[in-house]
Amino acid sequence: MPSDTVSQGLERLLLTYARTDLTIARGEGCRVWDADGREYLDFGGGIAVVSLGHCHPGPLAAAQAQLERLWHVSNLYRTEPAEELASLLSARFGGAQAFFCNSGAEAIEAALKYARKATGKPGVVALEGSFHGRTLGALSATGQPGKRTAFEPLVPGVRFVPPNDVQALQHAADEEVGLILLEPVLGEGGVVPLDAEFVAAAAALPQLLCVDEVQTGVGRTGSFFAFEELGVRPDLVTLAKGLANGLPIGALLVADDSTGAFAPGDHGSTFGGNPVSCAVACAVVEAIDAELLDNVQLRVARLAGALAPLPGVISVRGCGLLIGIEVEGAAVAVVDAARESGLLVLTAGANVVRLTPPLTVTAEDVEDALQVLERILC
Ligand code: PLP
Image (cartoon, rainbow, N blue to C red; front, side, top):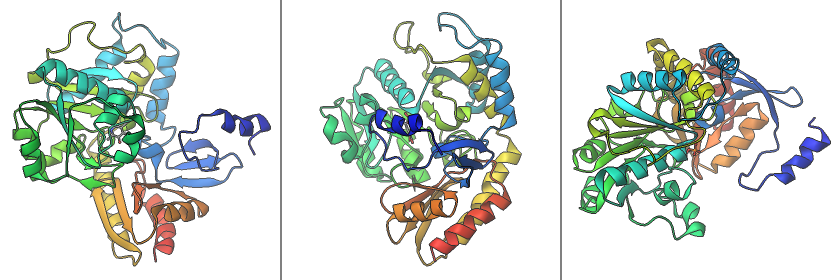
């Protein structure tokens, strides 16, 4: 049981999350344990963050080695982990420069500023139902009125179009628009994959295209970047969640043919490029190999195949291990029932249950999760 001091500490946290009364104390692989020692199978993975599983030995060793060497130095100096990570990401992208920050929202802020500086245009086209973060700039480009209204006026110039509506996109992208911002699969917005045709139409427009891979990137969808499966090469990419297996990090990648807009002083972050986060991220990126990506495809095939025919399931959608199960009733009821049975899953909107387990999830973990979900969704 948590001590009294810890229990009272809950009241000392600002009320920004509807927290479940479950204190997680330890994790290993796809499993976590609560403060009383009860085991849970973690199919949320910190919302698509713990990509290699809890306390994976690779990132753990990288963090320990870096902690003994150097924790922090200003970005006024060079560090090896940040430069190594930038090189690894550039190689995966096929030629890019990186800016490192601490979260997905910060990566989006960097993209918004970069696009303004590069194009001189303030307009942005984003998607209805999208989610790009909670800071004012990222919220301005988030197409969910419920999250925005209380904080208006937001940054002006953002137009929203329905996902997969090519005509609406082409109409909105006029001469005032410098940036088109898309999630390849709308994650928080209900796990809605974009059509390849729609993304290709966005890439064909003269504006900069930023693909927000904060949730989909780093192997989650079965390739290192989700855009690889859509046949486009964006100008900008944002990464965060899964990049450092749970340590805070965010990244903006700028394709080589779009670099040069930022000059010293235009942007920055005290903690951005932190040596420990970057050393861990290098270990994560190196671990995303063909074998791990095959594991993603195998596990999703089994999960989707078993879940789709269940009577309580309307549809199963997503890409790789970003799975949305559209259910008959309230998704939160499924989440609660699963937790009671020792399985942690997420929602993505009112009637979509979201699964984002570690990419290292085993066949046995999948069978254990299915046993619980099949019982609840029958
Ligand atoms: N972009 C996408 C696609 C996301 O899913 C999220 C978070 O869920 C964000 C941006 C914001 O990331 P963060 O919570 O790290 O600021």
